[in-house]
Length: 105
Image 1 (cartoon, rainbow, N blue to C red):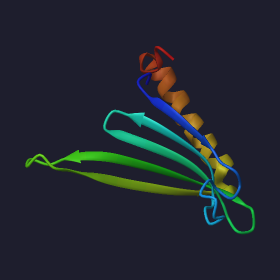
Image 2: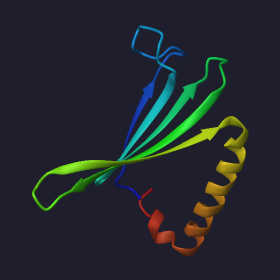
Image 3: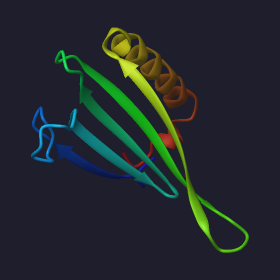
């Protein structure tokens, strides 16, 4: 788990495009081999936050070309705690059963 690259992007509430159209508040990019994960905090017009989790995976084709396969999850404020609890429980299980997966942290 130690070969991830993290990049943080702290943005103002209106985003960094200067036009006030962006609803992105904060972004974290995690590069992991052929996969890149994005954790994006976004704001609704009412000022509520939600999170998008995106997996972007590079897929190579036999002819030498490649495409990107993208999967996205939307997580809303009413589910933050339940999601965090479930993720923590799953990671704690892996940490107990396969501690070597967390070596080098």
